[in-house]
Amino acid sequence: MPPSINPIIEEGPITHSMPLDGQVIYDPMLDGGCDSMPMGSCGCGDHGCDGGCGAVSYGGCDGIGCGSGVCHNGDPMCGEYNDCDVMRPCMTLCWPQDGWFSAEYLLWWQDGMALPPLVSTDVLPSQRFPNDPGRVLYGGQDVLTDNMDGLRLKFGFWLDKCHTWGIGAEGFGIGEETDSYRASGADSQFLGRPFINVANGSVEDQQQVAFPNQLAGTVAVDVDSRLRGWGINLRHLRRSETSCSQGVFCGCPEHTCERFEYLVGFRQVELREGVRITEDLASIPTAPDTTVLQYDIFDDFRTRNQFNGLDLGWMYKRTRGYWTFDALIRLGVGNTRQRVSIDGETSIDGGAAEKGGLLAQNSNIGEYSRDEFSVLPQLDLTLGYQVTEQLRATFGYTFLYWSNVVRPGDHIDRRVDTAQLPNGTTPATPVLADYPAFEFDNTDYWAQGISFGGEYRW
Image 1 (cartoon, rainbow, N blue to C red):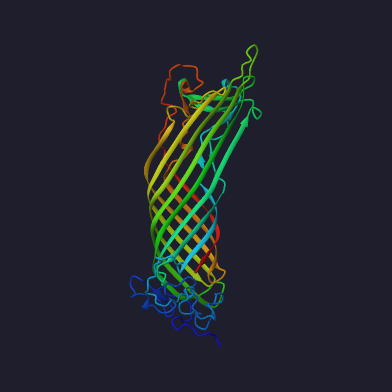
Image 2 (cartoon, helix red, strand yellow):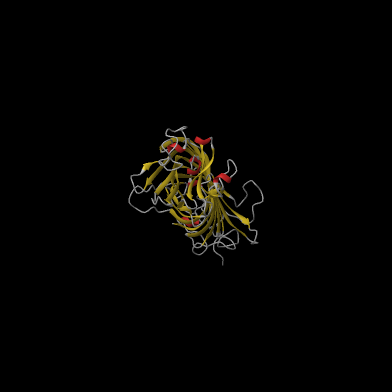
């Protein structure tokens, strides 16, 4: 004897756009509340087994049964609730009765950071073509294009038994992604840092790092990037449907549930990045002068973008047997606080550090900040498999876009007046002291990737 069948759901697939017998549609904006809803359609619940479709028990061929296959009153996993019209805000120290928690491992990629030529090698500078920086060893292309590892956590609870109002929060973090380059005179006899010499007619030039019988040294470039974010939102069920449908790989009809929700809340996302160039130089003495000069030089460029704004979203969820599919479209609208920090120093023979390296000089060293309007849309697609009535394994994809950000590679000005260099000799007075210059340069940023995780609901 099969379990009793919910009389509201009738057997047969949906073949029309209009509600048929056996299709229950709940619109909280139009219906008179949960008391007017048929049993088993109260927001579709979270797993939505209704005891079967027609003569099919346990919710279809692959549905997870609740108890004996018939939903029990008050079981939120089955979509049935008692006293659905009673709001239960968690204003005390009690644990929320209905809620969710998920954890996901993130494997993402981001928009690469563009860098100008920073390290090059070539034959003697006098043998180079005009405006030729030499053979570029590092820079002149995008870096930080490898995958990034991260973690995302989500938590929330429902304010009512019908699961029509809820509060959710989430946070994610991408581990610091780095890229580095090292070179010395042992790698190339001619090693230098290319720049545009404005004091000599704005032509390509090099600050020598290694040169035969004159200079031995090393140069290093370190690049880093970190992405973080968190948000809180209010969720509201706009519409839900329960019905029976014919499966593609399963001949018998089974229970399906669809939810449509709106989200509104607050969101903050932060992107921090940096580029640091260091040099350790030593002159090679020639007789009769045996003096060895030591130079320690660094240039440092750092940016920080912090978005704060309104977060609007639309969520769709479909449950069918063991499987679930979630789609979330979000749009963040607000302000991005942009910060750029430039610093540089030169120390000669271990003496006191002087302000200025090569690409960071008095003309551009400093702290700069401003506010820019930004939009931050995001798409999340998640496929889930119900392991138990409360535990779901998930696999997902995320795409995030962010307008109007600043990145350190865009704020490295290769135009240099050599008279500003701490070790410069001629001319005594800067010719064009405005170079290297600083100017805000906006760009767009994106990150995308896949996720693996699990969700627990109670």
